Image (cartoon, rainbow, N blue to C red):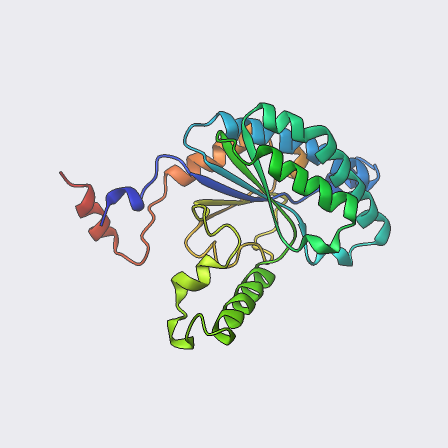
Length: 250
């Protein structure tokens, strides 16, 4: 065992549920759409911080869940337009800052123009190395595991695998982001304390951090507080505190 596994100086992969845009606007007696636009500014601030942080390799943001289609149609329409215009304005900036953009989720539900812009962003930035920015759009953790199981079933039907070959490692290979480190730190803004179907498999041993700060007000200082909390924790992965302390003893 390596002591490094149990205690990291800083998280390599940060995953965030950006909650509270609508409530932020309502508190100011503004349309919910204003909150979503303010949330985009917060995204820029957090991406800038993570890209400049040498220990952070991946930032994953939950932009639109598979359950968000249940919101009022006008709000969904506004979100889709904002998604497209944001991509149009930000892809070149991300590329110029050496940031790799990736999307996870079932993008077939989006209109063709948005799908094309997502693909364009991925292709343009695929070789960038400063930070991998993952945007979860029409994503759900249960969907992720279901599609992985479907791919495995297809391989079994094709004779490539036997059912007895299926294990955690093989299943993980078919999940989104299998090639990236699992999140070290999960943050949810807005005061809710649940993971809401986000990366259910990948968050198994992630440190969870909940804050009442609404997403448009979540800034670099707030992120640093979350990282400081992470640094003060001991990650056990099923071991005892004494075992981990023994690893740290010269």
